[in-house]
Image (tube, rainbow, N blue to C red; front, side):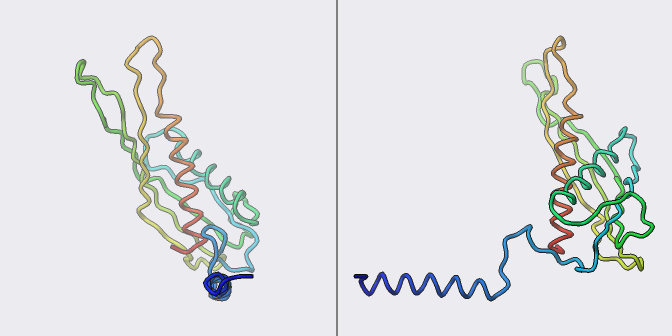
Length: 176
């Protein structure tokens, strides 16, 4: 037989569960504030206002992958016939030294910063989402051994692209 304290505990837990179920609570990343009538989102290649080679392709590809992985939308590259169009523009990229080797005074790590502008419009060109100041950073190390040197900026930009895509898709779906 349950003690009165145990019964009150069980009733309390059930009450909280029932209240959360009825209040619209949901796990982050699972809801969508986009219209239920949308089925297709066009994601044309992002514009690149920097001199970084193929950066826009990495970012666009990561966003497409994330949309496909987290939603039921069909993604196309051409805006014609799409329910919505996601535009993007890489506005700047900057790499700065983050740390130095105190003995040799050589850089041992770099910080790459990418700024991106994105906006989502519906088929009537009405703006649904906009962020003119997405800023993403990724730290990477520089090998001090010249014989085994490998440029780590490319893998760092790949990681940054994934972080950006996850953040963007979450922001669009949750309307942050």
